[in-house]
Image (cartoon, each protein chain N blue to C red):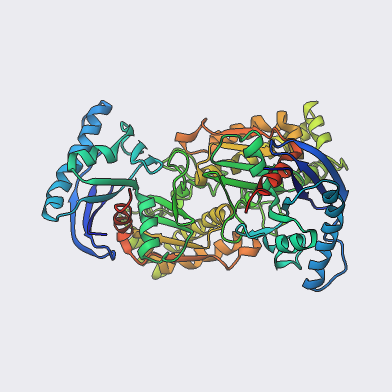
Length: 308
Length: 308
C-alpha cells in the first residue's frame, strides 16, 4: 500500500487529498468547480466538459505528489463497481458514461469511482464511528440526505446503483411536503438542511439562511425552532426504523453539516427510532455521530483507490 | 446431487416432501402439529418438546425414503446460516436454540434450517417466477406477511436474522391500525388475510371467515369489499416502493393464500408502487405472482439441504 489521491466531488466544489496507508490526510486542496454549469447540449460535449474540468483540477495536484492511484466519490448512480456512471441527477446529460476509464486515460492514473454517499459509508466503516462493523448504514445529512450501505463488509449499491435512496423514504403518505425528487412526504423534505431552513422561514416568515442559526434558536427555546428541529429528528428516527426493519443493521452513522445540531436532533431521533422498531430490536440499534466530520467521503475514496 | 427431504414448518402443520435434484416433488406428507401447544415452562423442556414433535413426524417419512439430507424452513430468526434459532415469535421459550444440530442428532441426517420466508425466496429464485434474478425480494402474503431477500444470489438475513421484516413497514404513521407486533400502521395490519377479513367484518358488521369470499364479493362489485381489497393492494404497493428505495431490486415475487385475489390486488398495487418509486425507477420494477403456489418454501428447503 502506498499513498493515493482521494477526490470528493460536490455540487459546487472539488476536494482533493493525499492519503497515506493509515488513513492520514497529508496534503489537501479545495477548488470551486461546478460541473453542471456548462452550455453543452449534447451528451458527448457534456462528457468532455466533465473530464476537462476534473482533469484540470486534479492534474497539478497529482503531479506535485507522486501517486499512481486515485479513488473518487461522485454524486451519481454507478453500474456495480465498474466506474460506469448510469446517471447523475444534477448532470442529466450524462448517461452510461465510462467516468473512471475516461479519467484514467486523461490523468494516466489507476482510477476507481463510486457514489459519494457510498464512499462516505466506506470511509466511516474503515476509519470512523463504524469501525469494526461488518454491516453499516451511513447517512449524510446536509443540503440533501444521502446514504450508503455496507453489508458483510461489502458496499451494496443495488441493481441500478440506486440502492439506499434513504432520503426518499416516505414518512408522510398523506399530504406530505413536496420533495426535490418530485414525490411527496420524503424524509429529505423534512430533515435535510434545506428543508429545516425552508420550513422555519415559511412558518416564522423570516429569512434565516442556515440551519446552524436555527439550532442555536432551538437551544435558546424559540418555540418554532424547537418544533421544527424536533420534527426533523423524529422523521429521521422513523426512517431509520424502516431501514432497520428491512436490513437488520445495528449501527447507523450520520455525517454532514446538520450533525452540528446533534444535541437537538438526537433525543427526538432516538425516541422515534425505538418507538417504531419491531419489538425485539427496540433499544438495540445504535445511531452514532460521525467521527470524521466532512472527511468520511474523502477517506472512503482513499480506501477504494486500492481496488483492482 | 441426490434426493433430499424438504420440510416446511407452519403454525399448525408440518409439510414434508422428497424432492429430486431437478426440484420435482416425488412424495409428500402433511401432518397436523402445533409446536406451541405444550405445557412446558422451562426452555429445556420446550426445546425437547419441539425436537420430539418434529422427530416423530419426520422419522417415519425419512425411513420410507432413503435420504441423508434435510432442509427445513422454520418460523423464527436464525443466527446467520448456523441453524441456531435466535428466537421465534410463536415459541417465546426458545432462545439461542441449536435447532439444526439437535434435529441432526435426533434424526441421524444432515440438517440445514433457515427462516421460512427466506426459504420461500430461495425456492422462488431457483424454480419459480424469480428464476435468473440475482436479486429478489419475495413476499409471503397469508395470515401474516413475511418476506425473504436474495442479494447477489445470496440469502440475506441481517445481523439478528431479522432482516426483511417487510410486513412491519409502517405506512400509516398517524392513527394507524394496531398490528400483532405491538406497533401501529404496519402493512400487515392492512394487507394480510387476517387484516382484510377483520376490516371487512368490522365495517360490514358481518362474519365472513375467509379472504377468498371477500375477493369474490369485490369481483361482484360489493362497495366495501372493493374498497378494502383495493386498499390492501395500495398499501402493498407503497411498502414495496419503500423496500425498492433501499434495496434497488427489480423483481418482486409474491406467494401465499392472498394471491388468489391477484386480479383484484395487482392493479392498485402496481399503481401505488409506481406513484411512490423514485422517478428513475418508475415503471421499471416488476411484481410477479409466484409460479410455485404454496410450494416455494418446500422447494427452498430442498435447495438449502444441499449446503455444507
